[in-house]
Amino acid sequence: MSEALLQVDDIEVRYGAIRALKGISFEVNEGEVVALLGANGAGKTTTQKTVSGMLSPSLGQIRFDGERIDGIPAHKLISMGICHVPEGRRVFPRMTVHENLEMGAFRFKRPDTQVFEHVLELFPRLRERIKQPAGTLSGGEQQMLAIGRALMGKPRLLLLDEPSMGLAPLIVKQIFDIVREINTSGVTVLIVEQNAAQALGLANRGYVLETGELVLSGTGRELLADDRVRAAYLGEEIVTAS
Image 1 (cartoon, rainbow, N blue to C red):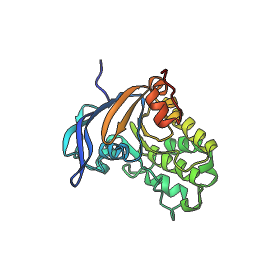
Image 2 (image 1 turned 90 degrees about the vertical axis):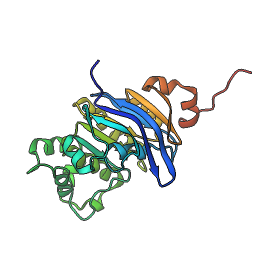
Image 3 (image 1 turned 60 degrees about the horizontal axis):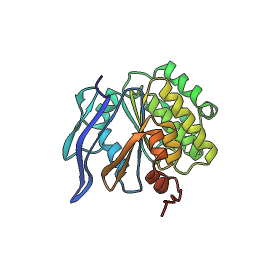
C-alpha cells in the first residue's frame, strides 16, 4: 500500500498550559476528501493550523508526501503544495477580485493564466466582479474568492476551514458542489465543517474530535449512519429500545 499524502502521528499542541490537541493521529490519502468534525473547541481548526504551519506541535510528527514538515513555516509549505483557506475567508477587502487571485500565486514569478481561467470557470460570479474590491462582495462570493485564491497556488492538499459558515443553504450547496469538482480534478481536500451532513456526504472518510482527542473515524457513510454522530451533529434524537 502506498504511503499517505498526509500523515499526522501523535501530535500534541499547547496554548500555554492548555493541551489543545492530545496526541492525535490520522492520515489523508492522495485524491481523498477527509472531513474533521467536532463541536466548537474540539480542536479542528487547531489541527488544520498545525498541518499548514501556522502552529507548531510540541510533540509528534507530520509528514507530507513522505517528508517531515512539522516546524516548517506556512509560506514554505505553500510552496510544497499545501494551501489553507482559513475560517472567515480573510480576503484583502481593498484589493480587487483580480488582485486577490494574483496574491494566491505569489510563489510563482507570474500567475498561471490557465489556472486563473480555470478558477473563473469554477466561479463565474468572480468573473462578473473581477474589478470590484473584495470588500464589496457578499459572504458567499468572498468564500468563492478565498477558495479561488488558494487554487491559484496549485495545491496538492487544500485545507478548508468552515467553508459554509454564515452562508445561505443554496450557496452552501454551490460551494460543496465546487469542492467536489476541485477534488475530482485531482486536489486532495481536508475539510473542517460543522455542517456534518454536507461534509460527510462529500467525504471519503472522516474523523470526529472531542476536546482535542480523536474519538471516532470511518467512511463518510459509516459516520453518517453512526448514532453518536447523528445525535451530536445532525440533530437527530436516537431512540433506544428499553
